Length: 104
Image (cartoon, rainbow, N blue to C red):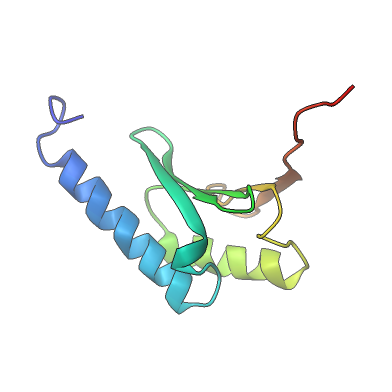
């Protein structure tokens, strides 16, 4: 990443930490429940939670995406369980359970 844009790693780290602070401050995800944050130049951030949930955020519109996540949680999605929650689309969140490995 540094070869493409020298400031990108620093900016991505700064933005990831700010996003985690906002998730925690708004009571959506405690910082202690975050296991990993992945960055993609094309996609944005994916926040991986201890219970297996994955929250996907676009590069912009964090306020809108956080409000959308709050609505998803209000409607009963338990972020301590393995759910894929894509908040990048403008109007809706894509929510689906993450299937564990098959034991058959």
